[in-house]
Length: 320
Image 1 (tube, rainbow, N blue to C red):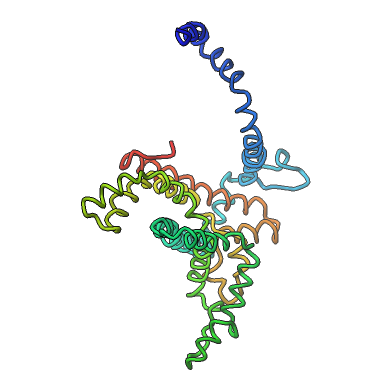
Image 2: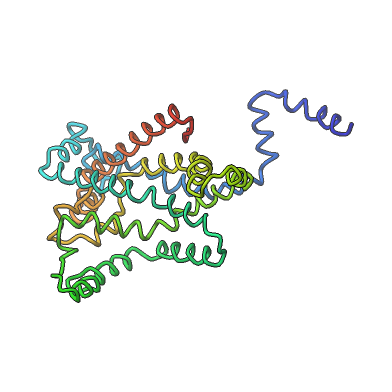
């Protein structure tokens, strides 16, 4: 009876106009809105407000005149045309695409596999130990990571010293262009796999033990239970993470690539992000560097929309 009275009291508020009803809900949930306010301000100030500066990609930017006072480029897409017609465009674009897709192909399934493997461990202490050990590399700074790569894979590094014990010739890992992709990708996999598996651990925690018990009674092996129970359960999470990963596929780790670059491997290590840095910071070509960066982000946006649309049609799981 009391519940019916409460419903009758709330009914007039629900019949209010759309605008009034929205403000009523905001006032009722103001504490929740205060919680998300810092995150909203962060993205608004550091992600949306700087978009105003994108216009310099279409201007001949002059620092003393600012964004508004600098003249528009003639033609408007002059800086894009300059980049597309440069002799290094094909090399830089191909390097970015090659390393990006190679990294996605290797790094995306690695956390899933690790999470599925650790989830099957029954010894709690050993399970926590493996989780902690695999998490720790993520918190190593990029400078330290590249320093470790130099230490282990230099001409007189640990790897060459160990192979030398078996009479093998030292390999110039850091000087060969053909090995740059592998050094970048696999060091990244080592650093991020453990941390990336956290979200899949959370998804696997929601799998009902009753499903595994029923499958075990029916004679299903452990591998069959992983394939037919665990994987379908975390598949929506996998799809969402894949869409997000593809949406940022062109955003290679700028610091890592720059630190690993050497004059001898520049042909395979120069990517769009390092090229933008050299144009904008070292050569002060702000308009051209902004145009190159905008081109890179447009590709990410197109890929994100395409993959999201395909995912929505095929699997009915998408970001929007």
